[in-house]
Image: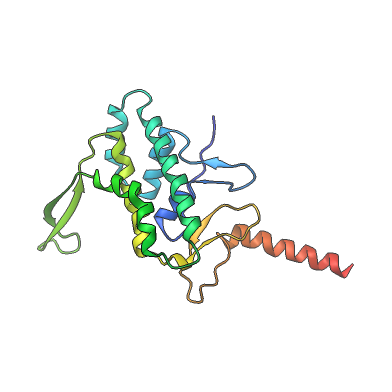
Length: 206
């Protein structure tokens, strides 16, 4: 039985973590949304879809339906990877809006509703809660689309970076004060870089 390592959430942005849902955590590439079950696991770990909704959609999905949606999610991921790589490292300009038409079409397909509920922190107060009609397996793409839209609207593309690890494909939003983050993780690529630098110093000393 194939093991399923926990998904990686290192980007400080769920939309970028979606891009990172295929990566090489050790030596072998792993795709967390390789099939329908993988997509459900990733959405659960990302906390983008309530667990009861995932269970209900899985129970009523037709054979192959979730695998098809996972394929759509992978296509969406690779399109967004290309968009982010094209624009990262510099401010996003209004010209990029035309490139976002496919994402806007996805967002426009949402069937969201609102309802009045009791406020979580104050049981005597009311709050307006936005909910979504999960009519089909395809609706699983909607919270992913929202996460990508938040990258476009809320992140500075000047602060989006790719890990400097030679074989690493992970991306992240650098929210450090000095904007000096270089690695997806100091425990992984940062540590590998330190070890490589140490070996190089020893070799130079002869």
